[in-house]
Image 1: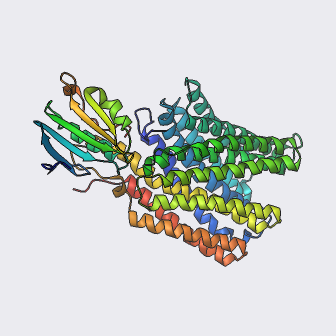
Image 2: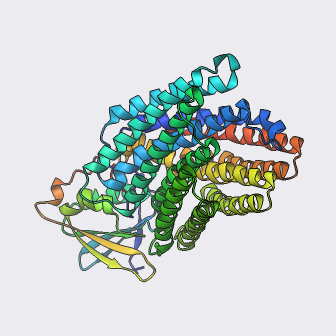
Image 3: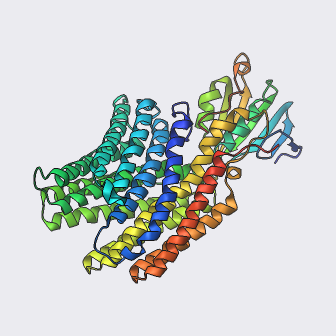
Length: 420
Length: 112
């Protein structure tokens, strides 16, 4: 893929900025809520506080940034504008209202009745997103490889949030019986493996070559990842919903693990062929993220095979923070200056001195933030593995500090002005 | 580097520019092969502003074909490309009478 991030097809930056600003704010809030979870690192019970944290982080930060990135990148990848920018704004505000209602319901027992209403509004906002994306694809004559990733990801999102909504109704009204745990698994695999991972894989094939100046590399591993991941996630959803044998569901999870390995190899192939050899905070974040992904698969496998709850939990934590957080934050440092530069400074080229992208980030702060995040994640994983609450709390505190620095750098980039 | 090559100051450029003359043609060259977007585009647009006659040529070394730049201004110039051994690409922009003067270089945003 030879594309950039900014073209005339891309939506106004203000739209994407909505999602990025909200995402960073919710990252900060979720970091605060993480401080109160130390007591639950060796618990089997999913508390309302944990549910609030998980939704704040996943819906508030991870999904929010992904939605923003999709709105920016999809028109560039497809060389066609998004079907409706108005749909995107409506989706944003409905999403904020809906998921904040859900979180309020988790946090305050007197507000628990808000959960199903919040979930319905969140669901409808995601349906608007999916319809907007589907209608964008409908106008195309052909779809390139990255486009296929994003299309399949959106189909998985639609499927898994629908599963989530049905679960909510069953829990609320008991209309019919389902195996709730199996449905929760299908919902999580569809969202994380189907939507989040497929978007990350597709987007990585655009952003990593672009920012590392990698070219002329083989893309066979990402092709393997595409087919194996979509097969694995589909089979997994069907096997959990249909109550298939454990052998089939285990095989489907094995396929997903295999696909993640292929993705990791593809990243390594791209980084190896890069012309730009600087190991800045972006490269460090990618390397740490991919290493975390591989280690998390190993920990989860050990956890399931030997029935070790703490290993599975540590693996899950490493996936959410070591992989997703590092991968996303590393890219925020590249994408935000890039988009703001095109919005604010591109028209000034030739008329006055314009900043370079790295000048729009406090690089020393980003370096310190990156290292402190790595340290926080390692400490928290050890805290979970050895069930040491104080260790986990210390790591959560460092992570809060690190995420405050992300907020600071985001603010700095948005407010960057040319010095006279 | 050619023997008569001299540095050329270009306001707001982010990489060094050079100039040399050969057979009465002035060659203005720059290398953005280790730059990420938007630097190749910034420097290319600044260089193309200097391409004001058939006696001038702009030589750009980049890590790949600058697709966004070519889509935007490519048809206003004659462009020769040459793949260099180390994976880089050399583009030579020449003045096209009747076309180059129509190029709008004031709007600098394009897909790097």
